[in-house]
Amino acid sequence: MLSVAPLAVVLAVAACPSNAANDLRPQPAGTQLITVQAPAARTTFATVRTWRRSRGCWRAVAGPFAARVGYKGLSANRREGDGTTPIGTFAIAPTMYGNAPNPGVRFRYRRVVCGDWWDEDPASPTYNTFQHVRCGTRPPFRVKSLGMWQQPRAYPYFAVVEFNMRPVVPGRGSGIFLHAQTGSPTQGCVSVGRAALLRVLRWLRPEAAPRIAIGVG
Image 1: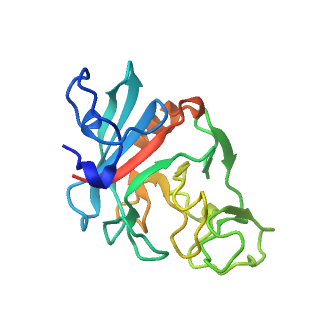
Image 2: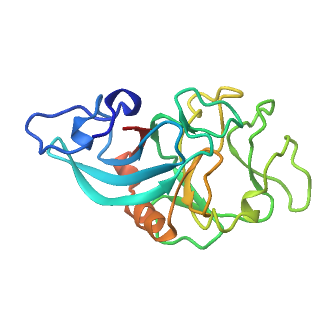
């Protein structure tokens, strides 16, 4: 059973078959849902499942898939650089990215090139957004990790989790993605195996207003 309070995902519907997604509250908008369930807040391991809403019920689509989360576990009060994955329910951003060619996603897709960064500098006016600078030039914001094009193993393709984006709060945290596993915990993202990642990203539809719910249970 997914924990109700941390995930805060979907409203229990008496007429629905009993399953983890239908036992969560409150119910998010949209008809596609990704759940990320960790057994404890301090673990780096989790399980990813996908769900679709049909006739008011959340019905299982795929999973469970083995996942990794932040090297400091999960937190409902994530801060920049603290190594935790944020707890909560978030939208999937309208653009997906990747070092590899578009694998057939339905979302707008940008193939990453030299000079593509995610701004992780809380003092920057473009904090927690995608930014492109001329290849070989230093970005106008403080850099603490490699450029997106320099991480092809983690980022063959990925979805952006809209954590701290509406609005952006300086220092709250940045660059939370659903990306490919590298064999280690993440800096705060959610990672799954490449085959599972492909399956999830190809399944997502913008018109379904997909959400990702991350929590402990």
